[in-house]
Amino acid sequence: MKKQDLTRRELLGAGGAIVVASAAQAAVAQSSLDLPEGIKSANVSLIATTYSKMGINELDYSMSHDIKPLTPDGKTMIGPAVTCKWEIGTIEDMEDVNKYIYDPLDQAPAGSVWVIESGTDEIYSMFGDIITLACSKRGMLGAVTDNGCRDIEEIKKQGFAVFAKSTIPYGPKGLRPVGANVPITCGGVTVNPGDLIAADIDGVIVIPKELIMQLNEGVAEHLAYEQEVRAKVEAGETLRSAYPY
Image (cartoon, rainbow, N blue to C red; front, side, top):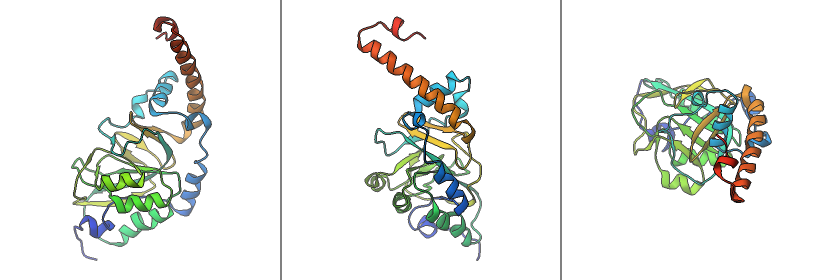
């Protein structure tokens, strides 16, 4: 096939996005959906605080603050990452679209979060409502990208969570998908397939696979501490007494 710059509609049937998981990778991601109880009940701020309490720099795992919730619902989304990588270039073979977009999307595990590295500072729509509809039908929780998206009003109706820099009406130009379920960098943070992504109104934070159980223990401890502090404050105790810094 000749080199070509495809329109977003030609490329992705009205919404670019990449979700990838081979059968084996999907099984691994699916097994991660039994989230530990502590993490399951945590929000992003609690996870960040727990990192700090553990002596881990939470900034290393917190995505850029310009990635914001575009479909806020007051909930915290937590699920294993399905990663996707774009780079600057031209699509040379439409089979790459099938390999890196359509086929993997059809295999994406329920409960996962699709994380997209766009490979550019230019703002484009990396996906739209048709792709998110397919994700929703497969039980995916949401999408995180270091770029933009469109069709937000339709996506809101689907109940699909989107965390992105901006809305924008046109798709990627001069970009090509080059990887699926590989390590990526999104919002300044390294994300590996299967790492947990937590996202809500306060931001997006990554929990590497190897830290999940350790962080879970810390989250449970800090959650219990915060509940105790709240009870003291509710009872009228002073901040100096109830909430020592």
